[in-house]
Length: 192
Image (cartoon, rainbow, N blue to C red; front, side, top):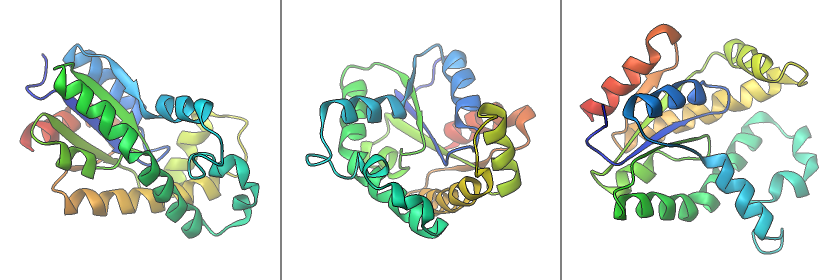
């Protein structure tokens, strides 16, 4: 059952469960799934740190690993802001050609949907429990280290995304319980 809008954005912090919702949502709507991280990878491949310092920041400034979680979370939004024109262009292209897509990623900002008009809807998947986020990381990256620090950063990013979503009248949906998260996300999108 295809949605009456064209682009669906599934926003949320890393480890919140976006992929676990976006994949079945795209299948339910019968549309492709696009991952925002693929655009980041492509842009990094065709630019240099001098051309796009924000996009290459994490690779060129390894000292960030010693920063406080709050500082890293703030930097996340600087990178998201640098990516915003690229994401807006992709969204506008899908709208212009009436090419439905579910687009997910942790650099997607909820205001992208609000600024794009009625053809675009977004939801922020929200998980604030740092223990749960760390467990989510461990499930997909069993050998990863420092999950607690990453989880703290993710919780801070999630809180900011939720605040931005509310400011732009974009629904915020708790990630759990997982058993009905897809249905809750879809209901929130349809109620927007």
